[in-house]
Image (tube, rainbow, N blue to C red):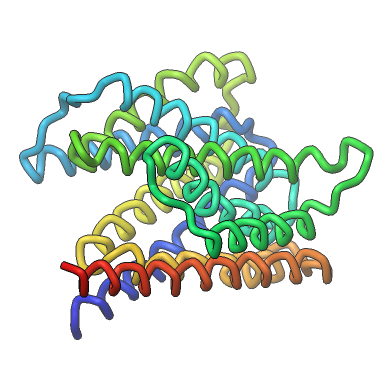
Length: 289
């Protein structure tokens, strides 16, 4: 088995873990979003700390301001995503979350001086048309969860953009550790204000699974990218939409409506076009070098 095949398997495993994390979040509606975030972030902190010790890396970041900003962006991204998961069908929240990659294109162009081509502009427009089909805009408060999902995707995209910037100065394990540390500390006051609820062992187990699946998804993704390039693997993250549709039907009898399915198909198509564009651009760069 070559490295690319191993990378694909790991990326599909990451997609499954993201879908299972969302399932665990949705399965405890009586628990506050802040408490779910605490368990996710605290376990991320533990896992990243173990990885740093195991790989003999440094806990001290070099670009501390950048690490703080990345952590806040990541925290806001998780908050928006978890709110959407709690109030939307699982598939819809996952579809909206996948627009984060298109926000990365925009933000990297604005702040990292990465060139945005006309084809990418078309891809971004196509992706957000898909998002409109999922959101189904209307003049009442029922649209708030979908907008929260898009809000979360924007800040997730901002966090990923910051990671690309921080990779110039800091180790990936250190970046994840700072996110776990800062986001865990930041969410504790909110969790205490919302009221800490843990009345049964099944609840505790589900919250632990939120953190385990989130950490596993990140680890699988990191190892996948160590075996093959992001341009070759990123498309496989969209498989989490398929996993979410299947889980939503089995667990909650959630059948996506025609508009959501069409929106999801458009977003996946835009993601595939961006995937093919990146492969072609990387091949061109390699030939010029």
